Length: 368
Image 1 (cartoon, rainbow, N blue to C red):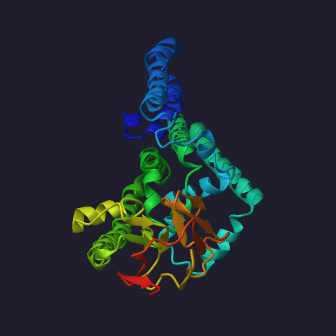
Image 2: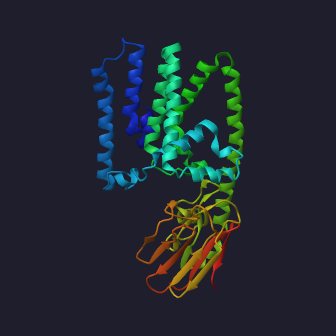
Image 3: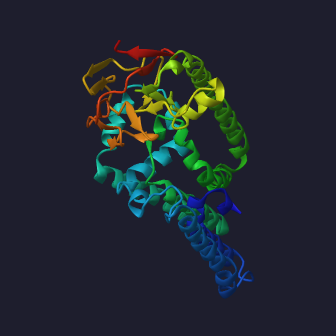
Protein backbone atom coordinates (compact mmCIF):
# COMPACT_ATOMS: atom_id res chain seq x y z
CA UNK A 1 0.00 0.00 0.00
CA UNK A 2 2.86 2.39 0.74
CA UNK A 3 4.05 1.98 -2.83
CA UNK A 4 0.79 3.41 -4.16
CA UNK A 5 1.69 6.89 -2.89
CA UNK A 6 4.80 7.43 -4.98
CA UNK A 7 6.34 5.63 -7.94
CA UNK A 8 9.82 6.52 -6.63
CA UNK A 9 8.98 4.80 -3.35
CA UNK A 10 7.58 1.81 -5.24
CA UNK A 11 11.07 1.19 -6.63
CA UNK A 12 12.44 0.42 -3.17
CA UNK A 13 9.41 -1.38 -1.75
CA UNK A 14 10.92 -4.85 -2.40
CA UNK A 15 13.96 -3.87 -0.32
CA UNK A 16 11.80 -2.60 2.53
CA UNK A 17 9.61 -5.71 2.43
CA UNK A 18 12.75 -7.85 2.55
CA UNK A 19 14.04 -6.07 5.66
CA UNK A 20 10.67 -6.42 7.40
CA UNK A 21 10.49 -10.08 6.38
CA UNK A 22 13.93 -10.71 7.85
CA UNK A 23 12.81 -9.04 11.08
CA UNK A 24 9.66 -11.15 11.13
CA UNK A 25 11.66 -14.35 10.59
CA UNK A 26 14.07 -13.36 13.35
CA UNK A 27 11.34 -12.71 15.90
CA UNK A 28 8.80 -15.30 14.73
CA UNK A 29 10.10 -18.40 12.97
CA UNK A 30 6.61 -19.75 12.35
CA UNK A 31 5.76 -17.01 9.88
CA UNK A 32 5.77 -16.80 6.09
CA UNK A 33 8.19 -19.17 4.37
CA UNK A 34 10.90 -17.63 2.11
CA UNK A 35 9.52 -19.18 -1.08
CA UNK A 36 6.03 -17.85 -0.31
CA UNK A 37 7.52 -14.41 0.44
CA UNK A 38 9.23 -14.35 -2.96
CA UNK A 39 6.18 -15.49 -4.94
CA UNK A 40 3.47 -13.56 -3.05
CA UNK A 41 5.24 -10.28 -2.27
CA UNK A 42 8.49 -9.70 -4.18
CA UNK A 43 7.35 -11.10 -7.56
CA UNK A 44 4.12 -9.02 -7.68
CA UNK A 45 6.14 -5.90 -6.82
CA UNK A 46 8.55 -6.56 -9.67
CA UNK A 47 5.61 -7.04 -12.04
CA UNK A 48 4.02 -3.76 -10.90
CA UNK A 49 7.29 -1.86 -11.31
CA UNK A 50 7.88 -3.33 -14.76
CA UNK A 51 4.31 -2.47 -15.69
CA UNK A 52 4.92 1.15 -14.66
CA UNK A 53 7.89 1.49 -17.02
CA UNK A 54 6.03 -0.15 -19.90
CA UNK A 55 2.97 2.07 -19.36
CA UNK A 56 5.17 5.20 -19.37
CA UNK A 57 6.78 4.12 -22.62
CA UNK A 58 3.43 3.40 -24.29
CA UNK A 59 1.72 6.60 -23.12
CA UNK A 60 4.51 9.21 -23.21
CA UNK A 61 7.18 7.60 -25.38
CA UNK A 62 9.65 7.72 -22.48
CA UNK A 63 10.54 5.09 -19.94
CA UNK A 64 10.10 7.65 -17.14
CA UNK A 65 6.93 9.73 -16.86
CA UNK A 66 8.74 13.09 -16.67
CA UNK A 67 10.74 12.30 -19.80
CA UNK A 68 13.85 11.91 -17.68
CA UNK A 69 16.74 9.57 -18.16
CA UNK A 70 18.76 7.32 -15.90
CA UNK A 71 21.35 10.10 -15.88
CA UNK A 72 18.76 12.45 -14.37
CA UNK A 73 18.00 9.96 -11.61
CA UNK A 74 21.66 9.60 -10.64
CA UNK A 75 22.53 13.25 -11.31
CA UNK A 76 24.78 13.54 -8.25
CA UNK A 77 27.39 11.24 -6.77
CA UNK A 78 27.64 13.08 -3.45
CA UNK A 79 24.94 11.09 -1.72
CA UNK A 80 26.70 11.29 1.63
CA UNK A 81 26.18 15.06 1.79
CA UNK A 82 22.49 14.77 0.93
CA UNK A 83 22.00 11.95 3.42
CA UNK A 84 23.55 14.07 6.20
CA UNK A 85 21.17 16.89 5.28
CA UNK A 86 18.26 14.52 5.80
CA UNK A 87 19.70 13.53 9.17
CA UNK A 88 19.97 17.23 10.10
CA UNK A 89 16.40 17.79 8.92
CA UNK A 90 14.85 14.86 10.77
CA UNK A 91 16.93 14.68 13.92
CA UNK A 92 17.59 18.35 14.80
CA UNK A 93 15.09 20.48 12.80
CA UNK A 94 18.00 22.24 11.11
CA UNK A 95 15.89 24.80 9.26
CA UNK A 96 14.55 26.25 12.49
CA UNK A 97 17.88 26.52 14.33
CA UNK A 98 18.86 30.15 15.14
CA UNK A 99 22.41 29.72 13.85
CA UNK A 100 22.60 32.77 11.55
CA UNK A 101 25.94 33.08 9.77
CA UNK A 102 27.06 29.72 11.12
CA UNK A 103 24.88 28.19 8.40
CA UNK A 104 27.26 29.43 5.71
CA UNK A 105 30.23 27.87 7.50
CA UNK A 106 28.40 24.54 7.75
CA UNK A 107 27.47 24.71 4.07
CA UNK A 108 31.12 25.30 3.22
CA UNK A 109 32.07 22.22 5.23
CA UNK A 110 29.45 20.21 3.35
CA UNK A 111 31.47 20.70 0.15
CA UNK A 112 34.20 18.49 1.63
CA UNK A 113 33.19 15.08 0.26
CA UNK A 114 35.69 13.17 2.41
CA UNK A 115 34.42 14.84 5.58
CA UNK A 116 30.81 14.10 4.63
CA UNK A 117 31.59 10.45 3.95
CA UNK A 118 33.36 10.08 7.30
CA UNK A 119 30.42 11.76 9.03
CA UNK A 120 27.97 9.32 7.44
CA UNK A 121 30.15 6.39 8.49
CA UNK A 122 30.25 7.77 12.05
CA UNK A 123 26.45 8.21 12.11
CA UNK A 124 25.86 4.65 10.91
CA UNK A 125 28.42 3.34 13.39
CA UNK A 126 26.59 5.09 16.22
CA UNK A 127 23.24 3.60 15.14
CA UNK A 128 24.83 0.15 14.75
CA UNK A 129 26.37 0.36 18.21
CA UNK A 130 23.05 1.43 19.74
CA UNK A 131 21.23 -1.43 18.00
CA UNK A 132 23.90 -3.93 19.08
CA UNK A 133 23.64 -2.82 22.69
CA UNK A 134 19.87 -3.17 22.60
CA UNK A 135 20.10 -6.58 20.92
CA UNK A 136 22.44 -7.72 23.70
CA UNK A 137 20.16 -6.43 26.47
CA UNK A 138 16.66 -6.43 24.96
CA UNK A 139 16.87 -8.91 22.10
CA UNK A 140 13.94 -8.18 19.79
CA UNK A 141 13.95 -4.44 20.56
CA UNK A 142 17.39 -4.04 19.00
CA UNK A 143 16.37 -5.93 15.88
CA UNK A 144 13.27 -3.77 15.58
CA UNK A 145 15.23 -0.50 15.77
CA UNK A 146 17.82 -1.72 13.28
CA UNK A 147 15.10 -2.79 10.84
CA UNK A 148 13.18 0.50 11.15
CA UNK A 149 16.31 2.58 10.61
CA UNK A 150 17.27 0.44 7.61
CA UNK A 151 13.81 0.98 6.11
CA UNK A 152 14.16 4.73 6.71
CA UNK A 153 17.46 4.81 4.80
CA UNK A 154 16.09 2.64 1.98
CA UNK A 155 13.06 4.93 1.64
CA UNK A 156 15.46 7.87 1.19
CA UNK A 157 17.35 6.22 -1.68
CA UNK A 158 15.05 7.42 -4.52
CA UNK A 159 15.31 11.08 -3.42
CA UNK A 160 19.01 11.34 -2.52
CA UNK A 161 19.81 12.48 -6.07
CA UNK A 162 17.12 15.15 -6.09
CA UNK A 163 17.25 18.78 -4.96
CA UNK A 164 18.79 18.95 -1.48
CA UNK A 165 18.21 22.65 -0.76
CA UNK A 166 15.57 21.75 1.83
CA UNK A 167 17.80 22.95 4.66
CA UNK A 168 16.67 26.42 3.61
CA UNK A 169 13.59 25.90 1.45
CA UNK A 170 10.25 24.41 2.42
CA UNK A 171 9.06 22.99 -0.88
CA UNK A 172 11.30 19.85 -0.98
CA UNK A 173 9.85 18.69 2.36
CA UNK A 174 7.63 16.38 0.35
CA UNK A 175 10.65 14.24 -0.48
CA UNK A 176 10.74 13.13 3.13
CA UNK A 177 7.05 12.37 3.69
CA UNK A 178 7.23 8.62 3.08
CA UNK A 179 10.63 8.06 4.74
CA UNK A 180 9.20 9.83 7.80
CA UNK A 181 6.77 6.91 8.25
CA UNK A 182 9.72 4.76 9.31
CA UNK A 183 11.71 7.53 10.99
CA UNK A 184 9.06 8.48 13.53
CA UNK A 185 8.30 4.86 14.41
CA UNK A 186 12.06 4.41 14.88
CA UNK A 187 12.33 7.58 16.99
CA UNK A 188 9.39 6.79 19.26
CA UNK A 189 10.53 3.18 19.72
CA UNK A 190 14.11 4.23 20.48
CA UNK A 191 13.00 6.76 23.09
CA UNK A 192 10.79 4.20 24.83
CA UNK A 193 13.57 1.59 24.84
CA UNK A 194 16.24 4.03 26.07
CA UNK A 195 14.40 6.49 28.33
CA UNK A 196 11.78 4.05 29.59
CA UNK A 197 9.60 5.79 32.21
CA UNK A 198 10.45 9.35 31.15
CA UNK A 199 9.86 8.62 27.45
CA UNK A 200 6.22 9.74 27.54
CA UNK A 201 6.83 13.29 28.87
CA UNK A 202 9.77 13.64 26.47
CA UNK A 203 7.55 12.68 23.52
CA UNK A 204 4.83 15.08 24.67
CA UNK A 205 7.42 17.86 24.71
CA UNK A 206 8.63 16.77 21.28
CA UNK A 207 5.07 16.92 19.91
CA UNK A 208 4.62 20.43 21.32
CA UNK A 209 7.90 21.49 19.67
CA UNK A 210 6.69 20.13 16.32
CA UNK A 211 3.46 22.10 16.68
CA UNK A 212 5.32 25.32 17.52
CA UNK A 213 7.58 24.93 14.49
CA UNK A 214 4.56 24.21 12.29
CA UNK A 215 2.98 27.50 13.38
CA UNK A 216 6.07 29.21 11.93
CA UNK A 217 5.70 27.48 8.59
CA UNK A 218 1.97 27.92 7.94
CA UNK A 219 2.17 31.76 7.71
CA UNK A 220 4.82 31.36 5.00
CA UNK A 221 2.41 29.31 2.88
CA UNK A 222 -0.28 31.95 3.41
CA UNK A 223 2.14 34.72 2.39
CA UNK A 224 3.01 32.86 -0.81
CA UNK A 225 -0.67 32.44 -1.67
CA UNK A 226 -1.29 36.16 -1.16
CA UNK A 227 1.77 37.08 -3.24
CA UNK A 228 0.68 34.89 -6.16
CA UNK A 229 -2.83 36.34 -6.13
CA UNK A 230 -1.46 39.90 -6.07
CA UNK A 231 0.83 39.27 -9.01
CA UNK A 232 -2.01 37.83 -11.09
CA UNK A 233 -4.28 40.78 -10.27
CA UNK A 234 -1.53 43.31 -11.05
CA UNK A 235 -0.80 41.69 -14.39
CA UNK A 236 -4.02 43.00 -16.01
CA UNK A 237 -2.51 46.22 -17.50
CA UNK A 238 -0.10 44.14 -19.61
CA UNK A 239 -2.78 42.09 -21.33
CA UNK A 240 -2.93 44.77 -24.04
CA UNK A 241 0.44 43.71 -25.48
CA UNK A 242 0.79 41.17 -28.24
CA UNK A 243 3.89 39.72 -26.57
CA UNK A 244 4.79 39.79 -22.86
CA UNK A 245 8.20 38.49 -21.82
CA UNK A 246 8.28 37.74 -18.08
CA UNK A 247 11.87 38.13 -16.91
CA UNK A 248 11.59 36.84 -13.34
CA UNK A 249 8.30 35.24 -12.34
CA UNK A 250 8.70 34.01 -8.72
CA UNK A 251 9.16 30.26 -9.09
CA UNK A 252 9.79 30.09 -5.34
CA UNK A 253 8.96 32.65 -2.69
CA UNK A 254 10.41 32.37 0.82
CA UNK A 255 11.23 28.71 0.22
CA UNK A 256 7.76 27.70 -1.04
CA UNK A 257 6.89 26.83 -4.63
CA UNK A 258 4.97 29.68 -6.28
CA UNK A 259 4.91 29.82 -10.09
CA UNK A 260 7.18 26.90 -10.92
CA UNK A 261 4.85 26.45 -13.89
CA UNK A 262 1.41 27.42 -15.21
CA UNK A 263 1.82 31.19 -14.80
CA UNK A 264 0.19 31.89 -18.17
CA UNK A 265 -2.60 29.40 -17.44
CA UNK A 266 -3.28 31.09 -14.09
CA UNK A 267 -3.54 34.47 -15.80
CA UNK A 268 -6.06 32.97 -18.19
CA UNK A 269 -8.12 31.44 -15.37
CA UNK A 270 -8.11 34.53 -13.13
CA UNK A 271 -8.07 37.38 -15.64
CA UNK A 272 -9.47 35.73 -18.80
CA UNK A 273 -6.29 36.78 -20.56
CA UNK A 274 -4.44 35.11 -23.40
CA UNK A 275 -2.00 32.26 -22.82
CA UNK A 276 -0.32 32.39 -26.22
CA UNK A 277 1.15 35.89 -25.85
CA UNK A 278 3.00 35.19 -22.56
CA UNK A 279 6.62 34.04 -22.61
CA UNK A 280 8.11 33.16 -19.22
CA UNK A 281 11.83 33.64 -19.77
CA UNK A 282 13.01 32.80 -16.28
CA UNK A 283 11.78 32.03 -12.81
CA UNK A 284 13.56 33.19 -9.66
CA UNK A 285 14.11 32.40 -6.00
CA UNK A 286 12.67 35.33 -4.05
CA UNK A 287 13.32 35.67 -0.33
CA UNK A 288 11.56 39.01 0.24
CA UNK A 289 9.59 41.75 -1.51
CA UNK A 290 12.76 43.67 -2.34
CA UNK A 291 14.52 40.63 -3.79
CA UNK A 292 14.19 41.48 -7.46
CA UNK A 293 16.01 42.31 -10.69
CA UNK A 294 18.61 45.08 -10.43
CA UNK A 295 18.89 46.09 -14.07
CA UNK A 296 17.54 45.31 -17.54
CA UNK A 297 19.33 46.51 -20.67
CA UNK A 298 17.63 46.24 -24.07
CA UNK A 299 19.84 46.78 -27.11
CA UNK A 300 18.69 45.79 -30.59
CA UNK A 301 17.75 42.09 -30.32
CA UNK A 302 19.58 41.45 -27.03
CA UNK A 303 18.20 41.80 -23.50
CA UNK A 304 20.66 41.64 -20.59
CA UNK A 305 19.14 40.94 -17.17
CA UNK A 306 21.03 41.27 -13.87
CA UNK A 307 19.67 40.02 -10.56
CA UNK A 308 20.95 40.39 -6.99
CA UNK A 309 24.34 38.92 -6.15
CA UNK A 310 23.85 35.74 -4.14
CA UNK A 311 25.86 32.74 -3.05
CA UNK A 312 23.20 30.53 -4.65
CA UNK A 313 21.48 31.09 -8.04
CA UNK A 314 18.76 33.73 -8.14
CA UNK A 315 17.24 32.72 -11.47
CA UNK A 316 15.69 29.36 -12.31
CA UNK A 317 14.58 27.53 -15.43
CA UNK A 318 11.68 25.08 -15.71
CA UNK A 319 11.22 25.06 -11.95
CA UNK A 320 14.84 24.08 -11.22
CA UNK A 321 18.32 25.56 -11.16
CA UNK A 322 19.14 27.99 -13.96
CA UNK A 323 20.18 26.17 -17.13
CA UNK A 324 20.61 27.83 -20.51
CA UNK A 325 18.07 26.84 -23.14
CA UNK A 326 16.88 27.71 -26.63
CA UNK A 327 13.53 28.00 -28.42
CA UNK A 328 12.60 28.76 -32.02
CA UNK A 329 12.23 32.46 -31.09
CA UNK A 330 15.14 33.16 -28.74
CA UNK A 331 18.08 31.82 -26.78
CA UNK A 332 18.63 32.26 -23.03
CA UNK A 333 22.15 32.03 -21.61
CA UNK A 334 22.57 32.14 -17.81
CA UNK A 335 25.77 33.20 -16.09
CA UNK A 336 27.70 30.50 -14.14
CA UNK A 337 26.45 31.88 -10.81
CA UNK A 338 22.80 31.93 -11.98
CA UNK A 339 22.39 35.60 -11.00
CA UNK A 340 22.21 37.12 -14.50
CA UNK A 341 21.37 36.07 -18.04
CA UNK A 342 21.20 37.21 -21.64
CA UNK A 343 18.08 36.89 -23.79
CA UNK A 344 19.06 36.81 -27.46
CA UNK A 345 16.32 37.02 -30.09
CA UNK A 346 17.03 35.24 -33.38
CA UNK A 347 15.20 37.98 -35.26
CA UNK A 348 14.03 41.46 -34.34
CA UNK A 349 12.06 41.87 -31.13
CA UNK A 350 8.33 41.67 -32.03
CA UNK A 351 6.47 44.94 -32.10
CA UNK A 352 4.04 45.80 -29.30
CA UNK A 353 6.05 43.73 -26.84
CA UNK A 354 6.64 44.28 -23.12
CA UNK A 355 9.44 43.05 -20.88
CA UNK A 356 8.24 42.89 -17.29
CA UNK A 357 9.60 41.70 -13.93
CA UNK A 358 8.13 41.22 -10.47
CA UNK A 359 8.98 43.77 -7.77
CA UNK A 360 7.16 44.43 -4.47
CA UNK A 361 4.11 42.36 -5.46
CA UNK A 362 3.76 44.44 -8.63
CA UNK A 363 5.09 44.30 -12.18
CA UNK A 364 7.58 46.75 -13.61
CA UNK A 365 8.06 47.29 -17.32
CA UNK A 366 11.64 47.46 -18.62
CA UNK A 367 12.59 49.92 -21.32
CA UNK A 368 10.19 52.37 -22.95
